[in-house]
Length: 217
Ligand SMILES: *Cc1c(COP(=O)(O)O)cnc(C)c1O
Image (cartoon, rainbow, N blue to C red; front, side):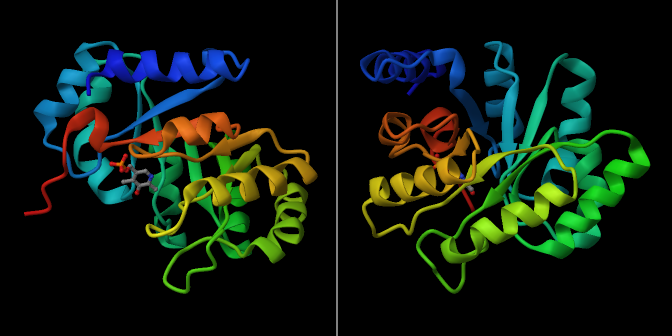
């Protein structure tokens, strides 16, 4: 699917749901994609990208940052505390805050640098043992703990289990966000971004639908 086709689909769902397409941020997830595919999307004018590994992002984005103005990078994969400094230097938004120790580290870095990336709290809505994120039952307490750290908390993020109906997870995330007074919802990927928008997504993370299948070779 081309970028313009995806933007058209975003606009269509937004309109059907009485939402403004400007309120939906399309994050082009470029992880593992060859540089020429990423460059092609940059050439079409897109500036908002997602990566799930700090090291991989570090390998390619500094060069693109020289060539293209106005880039905004989103970290959508797990963040180890010892990579937090590199992460805050590269990313404008971090979607995977899920534990107090990382929150504290990000807050310390924000203090030191006088600026901070926006953050989303990742919620493990499917309560999958192998998946990052805080549990739904622990999210309210964690959100208030993060608020105490004075980080720019924008909302919640989830990655539904692959074999379950994503809409249940999107609805759960929206409910937890609402009762915590959070407006940002990072949810929806290539196969379900329209469902996510219908349920309130403000940030959709779309990879293969834009770039083609990832080759993990
Ligand atoms: C890879 C990834 C995506 C994009 O997945 P696609 O199915 O290729 O759109 C979205 N979110 C996260 C957290 C990812 O790791």
